[in-house]
Amino acid sequence: MSYQEFFNALCPSNYAKQGDNTDTYFKNNEKSIDKIMKIVDFENKGLISFSEFFFFVLVVQTPESVIKSDFRKCGGKMTMS
Image 1 (tube, rainbow, N blue to C red):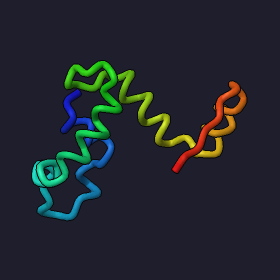
Image 2 (image 1 turned 30 degrees about the vertical axis):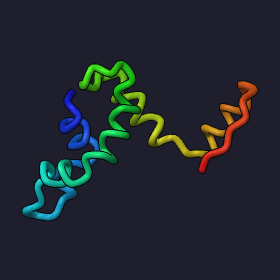
Image 3 (image 1 turned 90 degrees about the vertical axis):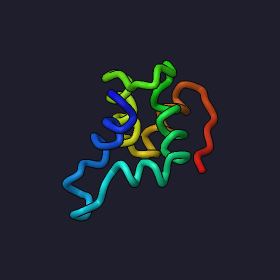
């Protein structure tokens, strides 16, 4: 899955205003999107595998309180800002 396909999967075109172009948005916000994509693409292949996609979506949908709680159960200290 390319970065563009990943972006489209998370932000489906049916939520975009009519006439909006995701390519234009992608180009105008390239630096911010690259930061996120590099986090998701931890294998640095330039493509996002299904397992990377699934893991990222799972983490994004998990409430912060659950992540903090589970992290503490494992002995970690964590601050989220």
